[in-house]
Amino acid sequence: MTEFRPRRSALYMPGSKERALEKAKSLPADCVLLDLEDAVAPDAKQGARDQVCRAVKEGGYGKREVVIRVNGLATEWGEADLASAAAAQPDAILLPKVQAPEDLTRVRGRLEADGAAPGIALWAMMETPLAILNAQAIAAAADAPAYPLRVFVMGTNDLAKETGAALVTDREPMLAWLSTCIAAARAYGLDIIDGVYNDFRDEDGLRRECDQGRLLGMDGKTLIHPGQVVPCNELFSPAANDVAWAKQVIAAFAEPANKGKGAITVEGRMVELLHAEMAKRTVAIAETIAELESDAG
Image 1 (cartoon, rainbow, N blue to C red):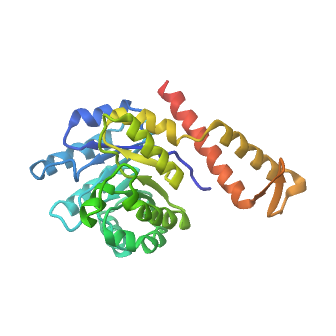
Image 2 (cartoon, rainbow, N blue to C red):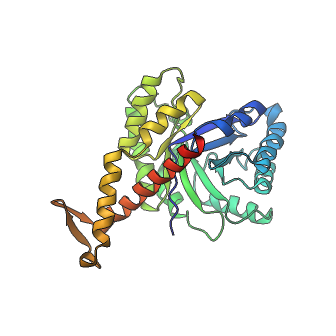
Image 3 (cartoon, rainbow, N blue to C red):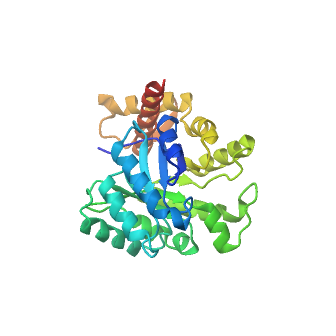
């Protein structure tokens, strides 16, 4: 059975800051991204690694999805990060600078050699020109007996840096790249999470960019500040009328008279089996969100 889980808000927390790792346990983020890469200075890498992996082993994050972002295998910290993350057994490991399917193959080989639990998922940062050009091939390599790829994460700051594209309000220079990755993700059953909004004091700007990402087809957004979580959750939650319609579609296809049909009419609208699968996802995510909010309350 396919597992649908909300990934509306994915909050980066610097692995070098113990208070941040503890604070993440009380925040309403769907996912916490415990960062060993960009947020950690070179001289603090080893200490952050030990601290993050200890925090993951100790737990306390409830139903939040716990993800460790490691340094790339090509760096001096990458292999040790991967081995330590494997031992800590987070829900997923976020890989930076993924550029081709072979990057996933190398990581899977290292995880297997390190004895990592096969159920640990991989998430891929899409943040280089090659990643965009190879998005379809990377997504096509998602399924594997161990360490499946589950999520694309857009690295819009790095994309801007490496391409020279401007980081402007409407993100027009990179809309084609975002849509390319969304299409690749959807073609192979992956979730996709939008890049960060840098001005954490500007809630109106965050809301505009969340709206844009949602309309493009994103499942959620990566965040850099706890204050961004609540508006992000609000904007990426299924609307009540969408959930009600989804339940109608599911119920209609479940009627004996519609068994085996590929398309039916619901309240004067034609719906297909594809819409029924989308409806199941909408309802499942809405129900999980309700559970998360009930636990938080």
